[in-house]
Amino acid sequence: MRPDGRKNDQMREVKIQQNFVDTAEGSVLISMGKTRVICTASIEERVPPFLKDQKKGWVTAEYSMLPRSTKTRSARESATGRISGRTHEIQRLIGRALRSVVDLTAIGERTIWIDCDVLQADGGTRTAAITGAFICLADALKYALRNGLIEKTPLKDYLAAVSVGVVKGEPVIDLCYTEDYAAEVDMNIVMTGSGKYVEVQGTAEGAPFSRETLDVLLKLAEEGIHHLTGIQKKILEEQKVSF
Image (cartoon, rainbow, N blue to C red; front, side, top):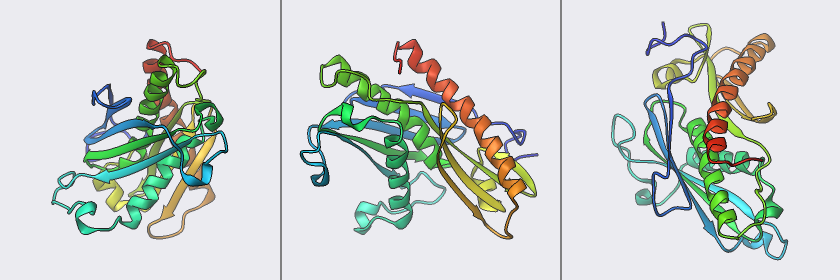
């Protein structure tokens, strides 16, 4: 039995609350079990220097964990004066993932900033951030369309992410913290709604694992991401957002 009573192939309950922050062009509070992440999108009328005069835009991300998102307080990275390697890695992952489903030429010379702030961490914060950030990005692009900043939606596909792993010899999906801590294999998978892979991060935490195990975990992740993109589609189709 898993710590929260789920079956091995069962996701945690997913809740997505849009327009969580009134001042942002797009905002979402996503909850996956006890993991909760606020995602906000901001449209900036300029691009990084390396994209100047190239007639295309940029999508990038920042990620942080609030001091009491975990059981013991951690110092804010802004207070320590440096960003950790883990934070850099996750920020780049979120940005890469989102750019994979955006036509950057269609947003003009603009940058869309996605800020992901973890309110409470119980495993899977980076995957929850990506899944919530996609809805947040879609809301910001809907704002841009409504206000005449762009002529068509730049979105090419849906995007979601999920963790999978092997715990006590069993393949499981959407690991909570206690499972993540004890996992023999730990993987994060990012996929599009059409079933294409964007990123596969996989690590043997102890003994190496087989190709057979990898195939089982990829199949499990594919099913989970199909579930997540189904939730995203329902939300956006209700708002008549199509691409």
